[in-house]
Image 1 (cartoon, rainbow, N blue to C red):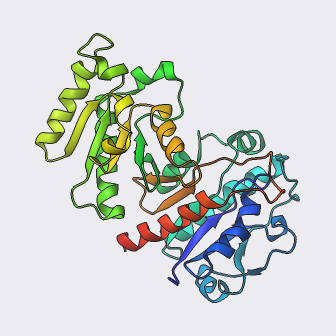
Image 2 (image 1 turned 180 degrees about the vertical axis):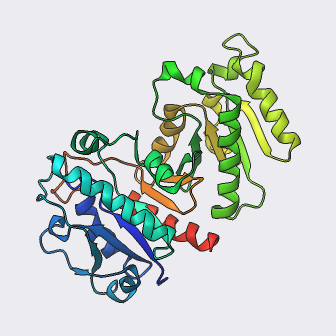
Length: 323
């Protein structure tokens, strides 16, 4: 077992995060080391856990119990019922985990799902989501969200905005940075010496020569041409409807899509349970399961830990390559 500890944040206490934590320990206790940042009182009754005072203690505890670096919350957990009193402690847990990762006390960060509305209602949380908050804490401006599974890696160039806003939000500068960050992340964290990227078009059939939109002709194709001349291995702009079948996926290491659903529909169709959310562009490794808080099944024991297991495994592999 690799003894460098990964920080696992509790996420929204009313969701399935507390249910997942003991499942993850049971599945991975002989494979890798992690510790949970949470209020131990929120864990399911009967969970085998031990409090630790620092991440360095996690490796000794891991074989016999879930290591928990305790963070006190002011209210009990009520499964499926978000409590505004939890909002500030959830934010503090994320801040604490980032600090531990940046100082090297934790090898990487894996985050269980938060509920953005609960954080906004309870603590005035001003960020669209985890990714933007982590970028703020790390002091970086440009990050990208990659969804990764054994069958596909895909990056949306624009994320949580209305479809009507995508053509305005998508710019040559923004797409260039997305490609650059993805390229650098694949080299540093995935061990690819020369990453191959497939770039989707914005419009149906990648514009079909201007008949269905001109963005591909006016600036997307010229930008990709410039970047190829700089040494990037790029394919596209490609029609999104022909990019994701098995034979097409063999030709690239990651796909860059132009908007949220263009990226997430194919990966969730191919591997709904094992997709992992990876933030590239941060000065530390961060992964997360590709699902939400699942209030409807919280506290029932029905949560599927597969995505969180893969998120911890990927965090371990990425941090090992970066070290």
